[in-house]
Image 1 (tube, helix red, strand yellow):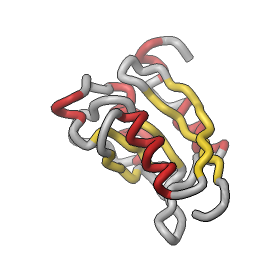
Image 2 (image 1 turned 90 degrees about the vertical axis):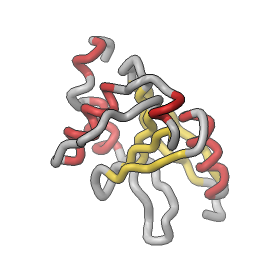
Image 3 (image 1 turned 180 degrees about the vertical axis):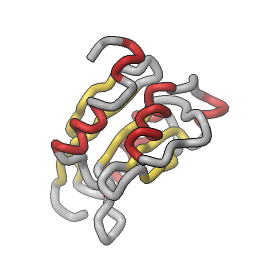
Image 4 (image 1 turned 135 degrees about the horizontal axis):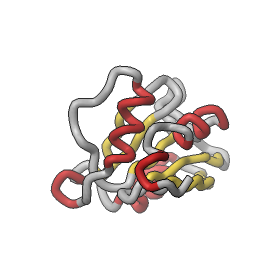
Length: 125
């Protein structure tokens, strides 16, 4: 990534409240820094679909509260369920390109995250 890229992301906190943000990155390092700052440490990615990835704190199970909303979203969006609870804030991005560069969410992908089953957890959508 050598030019400025805007990444549309959705962040789902442990309280289940989603928020959409647009990050500006000029290098892959910028994107990594945004991700690490948001999840509070090293990151782990879960590829949910070809166009939606979920990023979490790599040591979230030890350092963060459970995130039932992100867990339900992961199960719903992946189409095959999940077999574990996810912890800490979750950042949803748009997958990656052929070079492995993280992409922003498309409008339909962001809508899928916002309309997932987690919306009923806190009633604040």
